[in-house]
Image (cartoon, rainbow, N blue to C red; front, side, top):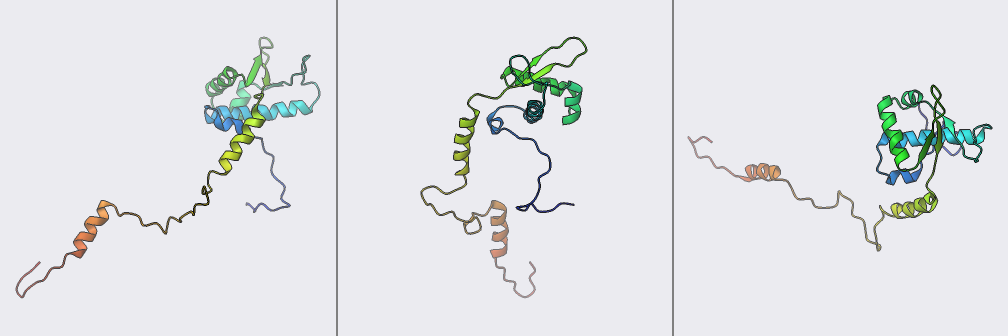
Length: 167
């Protein structure tokens, strides 16, 4: 059962989707994986013991667990991890045979200004410019397609029959 969201509604647990990912040329799986890794990094940030000597937050997350979380194959997860590493959004540090890698999640240095500028432009996208009136689609006169013209032509024909004639 669902209910409408009201001013006093409590929200279910959720993950933050960074807006800069909207402009990235990644697969949806890669974007979701980054979101999940960022969420885990935020949890590591709140808990003690998940910060290295340099002060960088890390987390452990096996490829098997990532695949199960996103309901994707391990190959798909590996491809997404490689894509995130190539653009320097994550860094994986090996911990030895049989141990999961440390995953360091990174954020672009200029993401806050990037996001604010792009959101302000996008918000005005659906509004008319220079006080133009928006015309409802039902008011516009649309041209009929060829099929309608043919049907109309056959309806407009007027046949007269004389006695003893058939159509």
